[in-house]
Amino acid sequence: MLKHFVKMATASSHTYAPLLLLFLLACSCRASSGHAVDPTCPPAKASAVAVEISDCGGPRCQPPAPHVPVPVFPYDIDPMQFALNLEYTEAEFFLHAAFGVGLDQIAPNLTLGGPPPVGAMKANLDEVTWRITAEFGLQEVGHIRAIQNTVGGFPRPKIDLSASNFARVMDQAFGYHLDPPFDPYMDSRNFLMACYVIPYLGINGYTGTNPIIDGYATKHLLAGLLGVEAGQDAVFRALLFERRSETVPPYKGITVAEFTDRISAARNQLAKCGVKDEGLTVPPELGAEGRICTNVLSADRDSLSYARTPAELLRILYLSGDEHVPGGFFPEGANGKIAREFLRKPFAAGGNRVPAN
Image 1 (cartoon, rainbow, N blue to C red):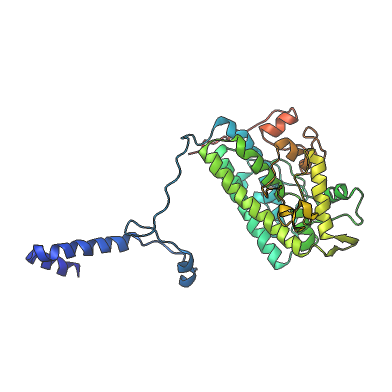
Image 2: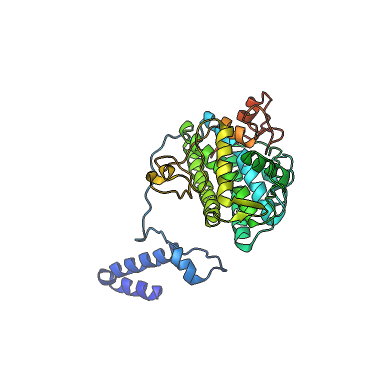
């Protein structure tokens, strides 16, 4: 067909030359818009979500906003690296609960030689909870990689994810020893309540870190991390809210809602910086706009996320109420310059501070 057009255009350039030009542009547009498609995806589903962008009349994207041309400021590094402590913890907890293995098997290069977690194991989960946990665990792998690629990293700290450590968390929340000891790996309900303990702290940490970093790469990284961490916590809280009135056997009379209230109160007490944590139900005056007792998402009076500093987070994670006294999830202390300075111990970065591209 192209040869036919060229022949006609040669015979009568005034008549057919514009048509030839339009034909060539159309061919170029179709050729440039082609892209590889995952062969396992049904075409109908792929077309329902795909947006094709080209220089041939397709939709245009908004250009990125102007920014200070510094990807990572030196003072961005330590606060963003500190987040690895929580990301390592979540990754190991979710991966072991879903797959029975952790980073050492799934992404060993990301551990940077740190010791394996203590007591993590496969949980007895229903299919829905398993699928959610598996997805979130794999997402945490991406989070660790993104942080290391942007600001560098440090070796995985020693993390205690044993049932006995979670039992200590719950005993501390209730002020007495639960009998039998709480086991996060026993079933889906217990596992979801254990998930209530950790991911929310990531939201607090990233919200608190946002005002003190300035690099455009670190800002972009934090926004991406915060969005997914908040989504994970929202899923866990929503699943627990559905079960809020259920009693938790074998603890007679103790509901899921009371577990969340006690955990939140304990975290506020350990952090020692006021109320930055709320359970699934609250008095109406503490609910959104002071008008509802439902509290699926924990937020302040303007429905904004609460912020916590590294010191506050360590007081909670150590279960000691003191950022200088390790224990709890980090029996030998968290890693990174900020955490090690609280312990007055040297920080070994392992030469892995990778500049952002």
